[in-house]
Length: 260
Image (cartoon, rainbow, N blue to C red; front, side):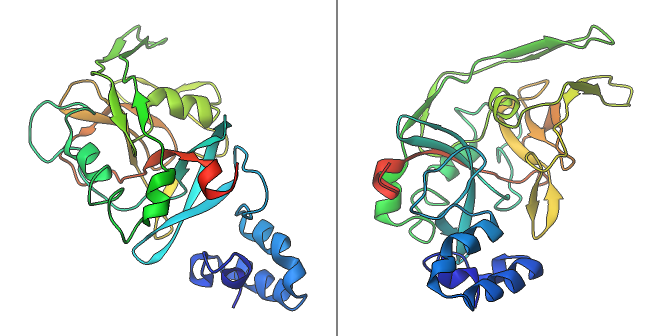
């Protein structure tokens, strides 16, 4: 028993830390009126309260367990969300050579039977609440302030996606970067670090993993990532590598799932 009962059987106690379960059981003894307090223990937004940036929200399932999302932005009855943790390690692209978000195999998988159209992940009602989003996929460029080296990531044509990866700009905007720092290696490239790392770091089974972003890295056979310690690696990982993990994002129609 625990938050599983309080949160309309959407979150099981196995998904909580031991301390959260103990607190939830204590709240349970106080009766049903403790629902909102129990949600606060887990940091998960109760269904009857408005979502806001920083909220956690349960939507869909992954491997038979409730899928928790972090709300990044709320506007016009819609919420931009990214999964709280990564799903699993998966290549950005299965074929060796140049690619982009519009062409990569991971985009097809996220919007196909692997995720969006997978009935084990989303019900028909869930899918109806996922907005069709136009991603501009613009090029990104900047100059290293120490080496004056130019970084350029070539964009691609706009795409229409139900599910997507975050862009470099979205990570910088929504995870509130805290200035700039440079990797202490011979490459000398700039990365951005995040306050305390808690927002940018994502786990698999409790262990931090790097996760893919939309843009290519320094060349078109790589893709940028957020590293396991919460920094953006602009050079990127080779797109075929099974090292970074998948952290999906989507825009949710709140009028369908929570009444706005």
